[in-house]
Length: 277
Ligand code: NDP
Image (cartoon, rainbow, N blue to C red):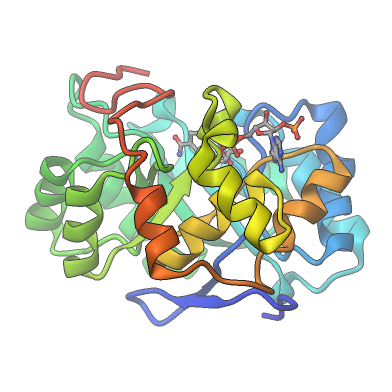
């Protein structure tokens, strides 16, 4: 696994994940193949997709056209909510669309607490890991109570919890719990999905001026300082480069704390405690 200039985070199973990857949520099929190829060209080696994004085929095409070795790419996909009762079938359909025989990280997409299918899905995902077809396994959008449930029932601790996380929604208690359990936190919506005025806040603009960086780079660097894994999505090649160029500077502890003070408990995506997918 080679990813130029990108730190690798060691997971609790010993595998390593690049701390920066490209997200693909809301990338249309038309956009996705070129975007992923551009990302590889830029130096990204970590791609995050999901069954429900309906672009796994395009991610796979980009992978095969890139000329890169499969072992040089860290590929994540996620089990669709509608496949929680058929995790093996859902996983095989993802492999077929991606055109690969393993993924680096397979994630259970939502806990769906109003249904009772997440535990069975997690058990299926554990079997998939045991088969070697998913090198690492984890979950998304799990609150502490959801994590406690699957861990106590199976004894298997996820490697990753991918959650909505940005300066306005830092999930400190959940992140601390995950750290204690050895679960890596991956931030989705690291730029608050551009649904807020985060990039116009003085706290961000001041740091941007100090380092001659863009507000987006400051926010992404803030995640890196916290040790989070990030997967910002963009189809725009210049923004892709911008999001990649965050490893040649660092924020001071004071600047990190100032950005921490933007916490407002605001989530822009669904609330996992009642989302029913
Ligand atoms: P992001 O916070 O990554 O924001 C994406 C938006 O920001 C897009 O509109 C993009 O537009 C814009 N953007 C990207 N870079 C910049 C920049 N440098 N300056 C200004 N605007 C920018 O939100 P996402 O929801 O996409 O989250 C990231 C990834 O996390 C997803 O793509 C997906 O892979 C994953 N995810 C996982 C979820 C889960 O439930 N597990 C839920 C949601 C996301 P443009 O493309 O035009 O540049």
